[in-house]
Image (cartoon, rainbow, N blue to C red; front, side, top):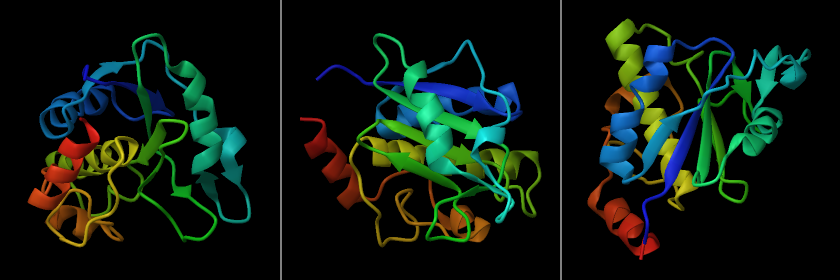
Length: 175
């Protein structure tokens, strides 16, 4: 099966270097090549919910989907705004397998993190959301990258790698 390619898109103003730092972990741990989008999306005012003072993931993902070009199989936006889905107080990110689109926010991952610490947290969550795009579900192992993180500290405990069970599942999905 040919290798899938993930398009990485800046949404708002995350740093270009942070976006570039996502490419190697996605390739190493998910077997997915990635390319940086030539175009960026502005801060997603269209997704802002004034009652929550947060941005709705699905509205952002709808704008990301048409950015995929020939040869690109998946798209992930990296943003600096606070994200939500209706049944949760916040999310670090969200993925939709059907549209092959995901979004990850650095907003809450910044809590108590310096530059290198933040970079690792973002890498963990981007690899996690890429795993969902590839068909993986949540894992119960708190060290596995597919564990559902509910706090930045959960992200810190996670490794960038898949546990054996998730690695085997990804191998099955790629057959």
